[in-house]
Image 1: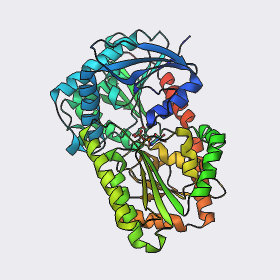
Image 2 (image 1 turned 90 degrees about the vertical axis):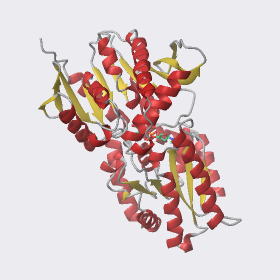
Image 3 (image 1 turned 90 degrees about the horizontal axis):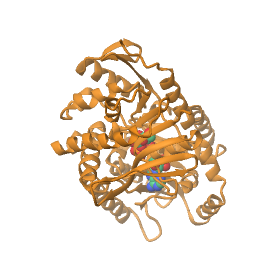
Image 4 (image 1 turned 60 degrees about the vertical axis):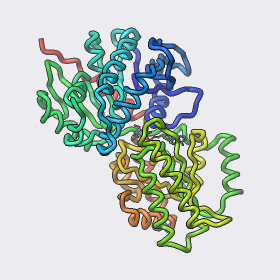
Length: 459
Ligand code: ADQ
């Protein structure tokens, strides 16, 4: 029987609450469809021959590998997160170019692809995910895999001028043409991809979002990722949530603004603290009546830029509290850790404003989770960066430019003063979009498009 084989850098750990949009979305998907999930287990081994280990949980076969110390340093910290992530997020200034990084990326993916090869049977549908795995399709094809292989990019695809900053960019991006279907979060990402392909490769455009390259047809498509709304409603009804909700009601005074992110420079966290400071300068009467709860999950702590961001956030949150707070009130509660996933919906529901202000983001699931967690009879207001992919779908949020602290401060003021009727009508419209395009819709759309794509070879 044919199965779905998912390949991504990290797999989810079914026993652990993990932050990270890809793991959250794929776990929801695979729990429903069943299949195989291949990826890194998050550990680094002390020898040079890591093996795949197998485990079955909730109908999913997990095949995971450790990374060697060199792979961790040069593939994961190096090429994936010190070259590709910053450049794809418009931060060429943070990119570090060491030739060893690229070699390690190539070697690591070749090793992972060899392990995958043994687990793929005829008829299986293979779905590769994200920037850490771009060249996996090429490696699988080299091994003779003829199955349908799809690729989904969770992060933005930047304009060609940025891609060109990557040494040997043609090698990297041409690898995307070894897939049968390449999926993006937004139309803008697709347009950037198309511009690159038509200007820097020999591929031809032969139809709408369809390219021809070396005897094969490659389709591209836009598949904005969604959330599992059922999981959120279920979490809200649990005993644990009821207790947490009770605690919120007992202990919190005043209105809460919430931010939930991985601690990543793409998420605009320092700018968010500046906008909160600006808000209190603009609305001094709101002091003691409003505060920001910023939950920031530790992420990629071995990458220098993330270490610096962590220090900056410690400084900024301490400084605003020192400058504006008093013995009974702090403008910002900064929580630098993962929180239990099931607790997030209650935290969102108890927050009058969801402040989601990334500087650059493929989609942003927190924006959707915040809306889906609200009480429809008394919903909170979403403030959303116009630079998040989610802004293309959630036009009824208060859209802001996160670089403009004054504009964000004005949006916070507007959100806190918004009449109930307007909150309800915005919430209804946002919910409609979130329900119509949830994670199961996303997965179904992508896999149906992949299955429809007959593998078209020129004799
Ligand atoms: P991320 O950059 O990780 O995802 P996002 O889409 O917001 O960003 O997903 C983060 C997920 O982790 C959310 O489900 C959130 O609830 C959870 N999370 C965040 N902080 C947490 C914390 N402190 N404790 C517990 N859970 C936490 C990447 C891309 C995004 C894209 C997703 C999915 O960068 O643009 O939306 O993949 O494609």
